[in-house]
View (tube, one colour):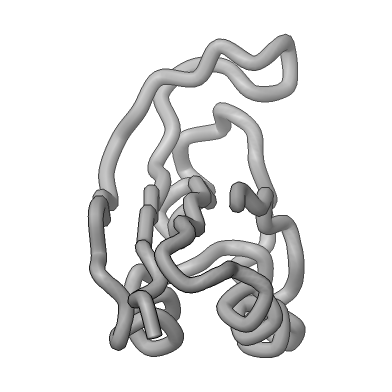
Length: 99
């Protein structure tokens, strides 16, 4: 399951718990979101800290899953005029355990 997260911190915990419940055992959840370090990059994405995320938020919710990939750092965007250039992101891929 891929989910593009562009939600406030207020809604994040509830949304991640919903994603966790929706993924079938053995299934995967993957996402890429902007980190708090994104704002100075000016390459798109939210300009409010309330819509930027930290890796700890994913580890807290999915700590009992197999973490396949977790990355926080720079990537280059080529997603149209509003999202291009160097960006700072978090990538997360987790696999739900088989019951």
